[in-house]
Amino acid sequence: MSAAVDPLFRRIAFVGIGLIGSSLARAVRERGLAKEIVISTRSPATLERARELGLGDDYHLDAATAVADAELVVMCVPLGAYEGVAQAIKPGLKEGTIVTDVGSAKASVMAAVGRHLPDGVPFVPGHPVAGTEHSGPDAGFASLFQDRWCVLTPAADCNPTAVSRVAALWAACGSRVEMMDAAHHDKVLAITSHLPHLIAYTIVGTATDLEADDHAEVIKYSAGGFRDFTRIAGSDPIMWRDIFLNNKESVLEMLQRFTEDLTALQRAIRRDEGDTLESLFRRTRAVRLGVVEAGQAGSFDPQEPKPD
Amino acid sequence: MSAAVDPLFRRIAFVGIGLIGSSLARAVRERGLAKEIVISTRSPATLERARELGLGDDYHLDAATAVADAELVVMCVPLGAYEGVAQAIKPGLKEGTIVTDVGSAKASVMAAVGRHLPDGVPFVPGHPVAGTEHSGPDAGFASLFQDRWCVLTPAADCNPTAVSRVAALWAACGSRVEMMDAAHHDKVLAITSHLPHLIAYTIVGTATDLEADDHAEVIKYSAGGFRDFTRIAGSDPIMWRDIFLNNKESVLEMLQRFTEDLTALQRAIRRDEGDTLESLFRRTRAVRLGVVEAGQAGSFDPQEPKPD
Image (cartoon, rainbow over all chains, first blue to last red; front, side):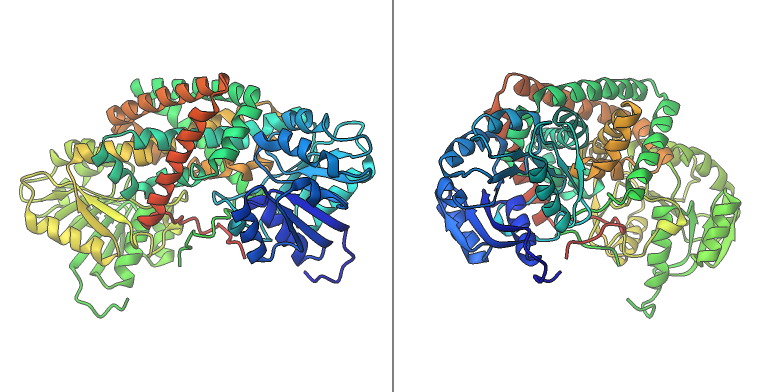
């Protein structure tokens, strides 16, 4: 991509500059989607690192200063920090500024952010369904969103121009953009993302609670399947703590379904019911083919070697 | 690797030629580890495919014929077929022939195979801790075992020369070879491989049981974590059915521990106990670092694209 296209936004302010924020900033820069990029984070060390990486044009510890004069504000902080950020940026927001975010739960976000924004400042909640287990500004890369879905969940009365402009930004970063009701988003993501993470965290925890000798062997022999769970369970602790707390109802419902199914499988193993196992395994193999066919099979782990 | 080294075995017979068998046959061929490779499988179509792929020198549907005159017999069939294979090859086995296998559970294998082999035919149970979710002779590749562990669990009275020769074969294929007690192997693999697979199969099943509309979206948005589970749950159904039935006690024990831990996490979410979640997630992230440091973080999925 060249920077020769017209920028979509004059000035984009990022509040938070971790994996997702820094990936989006890189994509915006690389593709010339904004004339100016402003970076803001509460952590002086992270801000300094963002400056060293050259992620933006301006750098601020104070979020209200950062958003002043921005055409678009992108909140890229853990969900638990949303309400504080919304309050903090409020004094800096001018009428017409668009606010969006990248959080993994949407109903709670709309409640937490929406009520703090001034009139005339549309909020377009967004969720790029992409990521790696790495975090921080160094972990980002511009192609993270390429061919990935980005779900927008604007309220029914949200300014349509604001929605279109945010959609255009994600599309320009390579994403496929989809509109969805926030509650529905939260349910779908509970099963496709939140429950898988919860389970991965759990099994890795179970393994580390084994006696010390076994623990070392768990790492040694992780190539048998466990390593895939450790990758997921290596994801950012604060971000994921906040996701579970902010999508509690849907996560608990999916977890209940999962537990029932796991109990049924446990019973089948105990009773040597091979047919029950085999028929499930044939069904799940077909799902894998669906994922591969849908072009969603890839992994973005830059550390993964390839077979020769 | 060149084929100029002295072959370790004059004639190796493979009984079963799926992902693991065909990978080992390819590695043996590529590295010149046997003068002759004999391929045997009950399926005429699979045997024909192995022949098209040029995996061996001789091809037989009858296992007893295949193992006659072999110096080493490698059983590469699902665990449920072991006893039948052991009975079938018995008439063809000569004194001094070494029998080994590649199965993922070892105590049950030693019981099922050991009692069928004639005196003077040492059985060296083996388990290469490597694989992909693909199966069949086309799925194999010679570097599958490179830098992966291979665990051997010979009985205390097993012929030490036979054990050394099997160990040398795996080492020559790039594996790191480890000796272990069969019961201990089964416990370690229950947590590092069997339980992860069971859980992956379960969650993919749970997702497919959702209403039809949601089901399509589960595949569409699988990049959020679910796709990693579909990959594991895409593994061979028969092979995995047999693993669970053949390592029942260890799998059920690890499953019980996992369920307790999951219930505790469910309770923490319901009660908004963020600290409990965060402290677990920090612990599991450290485990991931251990896996990466141990050089076991890679994935062998040839379909995985890399970020640019």
